[in-house]
Amino acid sequence: MNSVTPVNSLASEDPIAVVDTRLVHEVHRVGTSLLAEAAADPAVPPAALARLRDFLVANVRHHHETEDEELWPLLTAAAPEAASALDALSEEHRRLDKALDALAAVALGDEGGAGDARLALREAAVEVRDAVHGHLAAEEPVLLPALRERITDAQWKDFSQRVIATTPPVAGHLMIGFLDEVGTPAEVETVLAGLPEPVRPLLDGMRTQAADDLRTLRGTRP
Image (cartoon, rainbow, N blue to C red; front, side, top):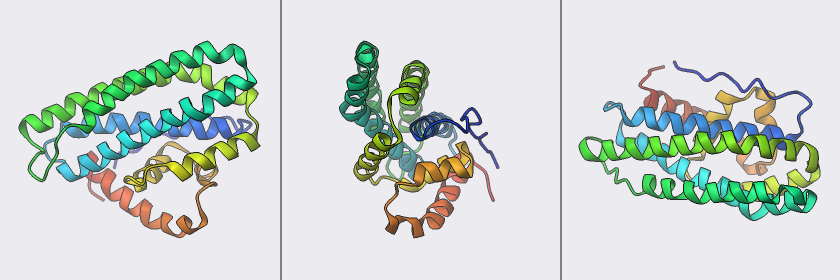
């Protein structure tokens, strides 16, 4: 079974804002890479591809929208000198939206996993993967120090609770599965600490469902 090395660059002294952000970014890196790879494998069922595609489109878009609308104003209030760099990142978000729109528009019905549809998905997935990886490489040197130096744990908790409350309920089990791959158990628990209490009993089932989907997407078996 394929595995992903946890993000071991997370220092134990990193604040929760940095831990949360770096793990979610790594989920986006791993997820977009997996979709580009799986789209090229004719053995991967269209339904599995569609779940991953829909998860990525919804979550990547929601992630950068919450940055633009809520996190950037919070950072700018604390560090006005960061405004120009944050505006440039928002411009990258708008370009990324166009790639996400193209990916979302690919038709993947029950018989849409071959031929032109599969090729279109592969091309759109590669564009999104490259855009996400490039954007994160530009964003993290700006964002992570700002989070470390300017945002308190209380501010981050308030922000992250709003993010969780507004996250689209699209294939949420994949987020749990990817987090388990890219983070240590302690880091994952930090990220999931804000989950509503009724969701916690569902985590084991979500992990099982995610493991099944990820095996299918990677062409592996238990």
